[in-house]
Figure 1 (cartoon, rainbow, N blue to C red):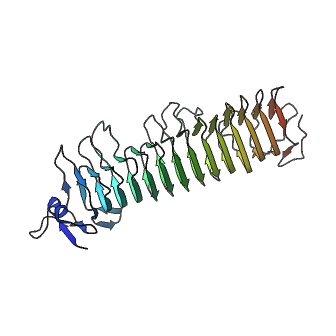
Figure 2 (figure 1 turned 60 degrees about the vertical axis):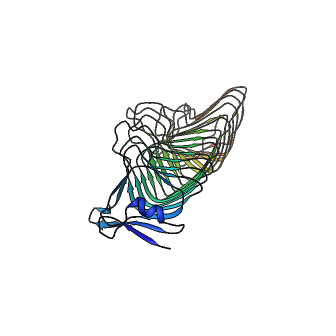
Figure 3 (figure 1 turned 180 degrees about the vertical axis):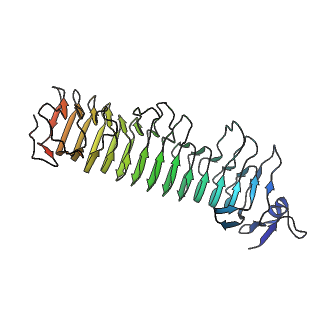
Length: 378
């Protein structure tokens, strides 16, 4: 293994010279404070198994990246490239990193960002058969994973992330957010995704884009928050599952959940507003499903068109009249329904927690008031 130092010194290599002579396993190191610029209109193709690394410095404000690469790298021909301690910034409308032709990309302490106005491409793009791993990343523009595998830990994505064409992507202890744009934070189509201890938040624009849009895909969330807040206080779903999608969830908190022709297996889940079920959806709930009633005008559980809900226990936190609506040919089966009002106001005789269509199947025991005596349901 050889190490090639590129920089300003008399004995330093240029990047192109170092890459030309480097062999698999070699390291190309940028001198502290050295920035490398790829000429506009060009890219650098990486077709070897090498490491490219820079340097970090710690100061009172945090971590300082001392090396910036301006331009685009394209991994091809089964390359295996490791990037460490680098700030990569396209200075034209090109990607920072493209991973193609069964290549493998490992990243540690890497920032992908750009100052290009009206930037229109994916800053990180991984194509069919490629593999990406990232730890301690900051990605400020859109990323796309198309038919590939990827894992990210302790990372932050500040623009839309798109999974397509049988991609399999895992996020661990990461943040995915879309601060201002009108779009989904996460778009998953014909793919699968795992989120463990993550925080996923949507745009605050006054639009109807859910935070996470899932189409014909499988999503597994563990102790993960999926939120969506509107600046005008209107309800917008955070997680939208459609077209035979499958949700597996253990713990966590969602602003809202929509199931359209989809299935959800959840355990000990908190919902800030409501669950909407339609088109023959199925939801199986283990443990407590806690409706916090953040949007009091929204029905907590709304079921239509042959949907089925079976659960162990539901907590209701506010009377909405009704909290639960069971539509025609729908089935609701609960072991326990509890009313928990933080204001300690007793349920009134006219309060209707549940309304069911005559042509539906409902199996619900007495409503348990968590502060007062049990109140029998009608």
